[in-house]
Image (tube, helix red, strand yellow):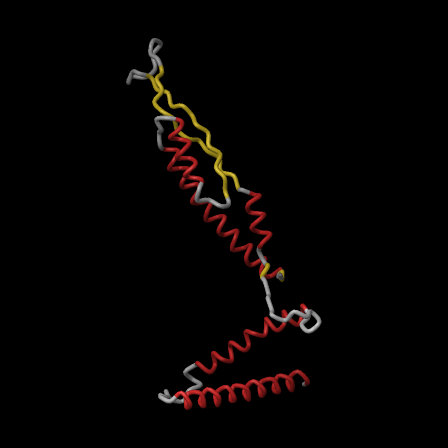
Length: 190
């Protein structure tokens, strides 16, 4: 397991954006549910529990409040009684700090695996540098696939000719790599 601080910082910035995006969704969900009136407490709690299922980084603390209205349309009078119209939510949104911390703790780490069992043959630092140099090899093979490398499109039918062409192209890539390495070494010395 390898930990990289730069990768962790980059992934934490992405995580912060995801948290902000989820906060907007939670606020939208809460505002929609605050407008609804529920007949029973059981229905309200079920809807509240269903609303919380999709969120990783936030918790919603629900409070149920009774809605009471007067029986007369003209407004409250001394002899009118209040009747219960239903229930509605009031909510507070809280970041789930424990879940966020667990996720942040995992950021910046990646696994490097090898079939080399003896640690003295491949030390940690050399293994990491070999892994990072893989990108250069991939760029070299991308150079072979590039249209500018091929002067014209070639159609070959026999597998022996295809193999021969790939051998020549790989050899030319090797010569190109050696030349590039030699040029970099000369430039470093100057």
